[in-house]
Image (tube, rainbow, N blue to C red; front, side):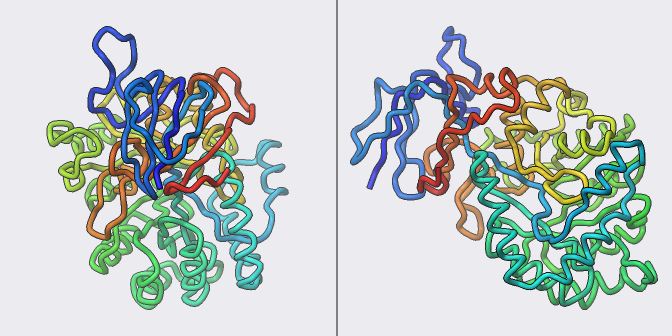
Length: 419
């Protein structure tokens, strides 16, 4: 069964292979008066409406803008409990510190599997309603062997990608080095069958540089891809460590020195020459993505991550929600993209790219099918997964132009309409 989505006012493919016609005034990766054909879960054709092939069914987009579905590459959805009081205190001037995670850990451990499944389902539905079609989420509110394993299993029931974050915080009363050994040993062994990635909170109040390195190397030896929470609360070793171990992304990056920018940029040298984004040949040459989390920056009243400086230095960036109960209780990627444009100095297309292709790049799902057979996400191209976000607006510019308005009109995920 094929479906023609026709009469698209502006199609933002984020597959930067020269779709724009010379002299058309279109940005690379943007097609106006466009159409897309879906066949099952895949995209079968992309181009101008005037050249669209016949299909079994037709959907009239009514001149609306169509984007790839948002790829949210950083979230923490497996949790119970409420941290409204902490938020209220922060708004009254109390500084954010890593220790608040312990409140959520207690509530999450106390929740039943059924309760957590219900909470996860509701949070995923909220994300999809806002145009998110591919989502990563982490463990990290269990912080013991059984609850980290349980979190990984539950997350795998709803998320596209699951990350092991046993190294989120040292539980109250635990010896930091002994807990680090647990994270590297028994806990890793229990969680490993259920996750693809590992992460560590390399930050004051959480894990030191040496402890973080031990965790990352153990997880890499276990065959997991690596991610790092780094440079959120101040200048530190997170970025340098992420580059050292070849992490796919380093997230937060609010406090960067020139050496950090240079180290990240160095991981991308020669990447563009390896092929256009979406070519399978770029998978092994991609560097460390800098993931910015604008909703979190606003909630913690932190300096906004320097997205503009990162792009100008040649670093590939992603925008993600960081949906979590303490510092960013939102899954609205529309809001995150809007904030990146209004307050972080990105153009509309740069922000859209970071929230789609950039997220896919951070998850190494930007090209494919890869070794486990999954199709590429985060861009609209033939053979990629049919993940589409239709806006109730003629262009993506309406996201920051009309901030806060409910502009998601329709969503397709893997060829199936969800909204």
